[in-house]
Image (cartoon, rainbow, N blue to C red; front, side, top):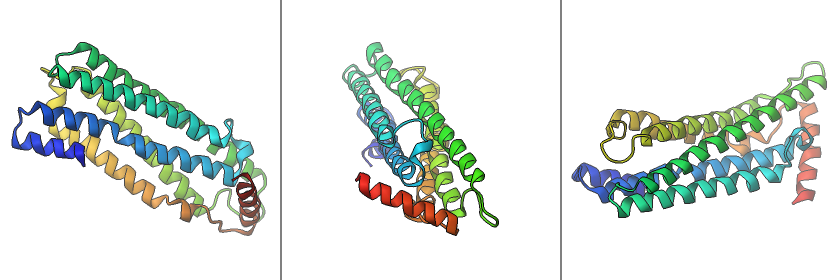
Length: 228
């Protein structure tokens, strides 16, 4: 809300550097909170369904990736603050902000790789245990994991756009003034990511449809309760 308040300030006064920096810092950092929710949700899902299929311990997902996102957010904030105090003239501030954005892209790519690896291993294991009439992965879980995958992919694309947008700096930049690109690759993508998380609700996804899966879910649920 604060970030889009900065956009309103720019609508009132297109030359307001305060509004510009406010929207840059706040809007640029907002996906960190969505990615943190995704990290924790996937960690709990792995613990619930099949922790032995993950190459990382479930807890490591949120400790490792949330810590990395905090570092990214701090770098972006420091870079934005330096740019703000210099009215966008600080090359150091720009480079620090770019480092934070670029690191965020790298973190998301690594997370996506672990996510995809887990899903492949989990589905292959489920296929090897199929009983007649059973699915490798139930429809509820398809929607749940599909929602998570869609959300993280959309946020990754959005972060790549922000890196490209800032590549020419804050001043004399053609990319940073393109409103259509901002709406399409920032606002729309984040909106779709939120919708994906709503559709892939964990309360819906942590339920099983077939008997074989129900037994597995009950066992995993018991392990989850014991671990907490």
